[in-house]
Length: 171
Image (tube, rainbow, N blue to C red; front, side):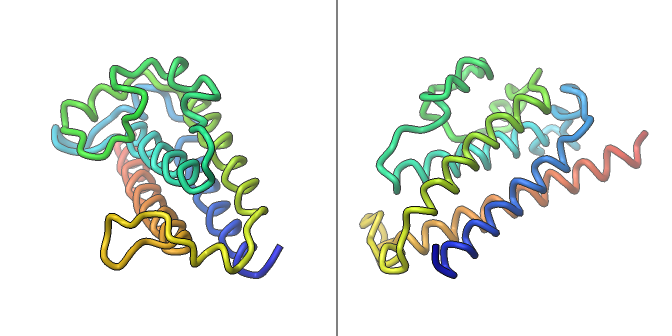
């Protein structure tokens, strides 16, 4: 592995740590709590950030998503298409991510994390310059896509941590 790969693995590992810390010991009801009718829940945020990572990394790697290949879509039993990542969800959609346990969220996240680390372990520095999405100007390289996923995931994990803090003060 190279320094770039090690840094990326470390960054994705930090996301995993926050996910575990945020959902630990919360009930499905707490995970589904929304601070107001337009807000996201911890369950939705963790599910969404994991879906984005699964979708984007599997696309870059040319593999199937863990969501379907690992049977997670069936375990979550959400009323969305299997391709849904939460992007563009309405507040009503967010409310449908309910009855989800911390173990289910971390199980899915851990599978996606393991697949991500496995893929990152195959990369060389030159791979980060490979264009993975030419629908944007400038075209999106693998390095930019991975940093984008890390940034998005950490923001959502931070939002979930904030909600957990509010819930803790309400107890």
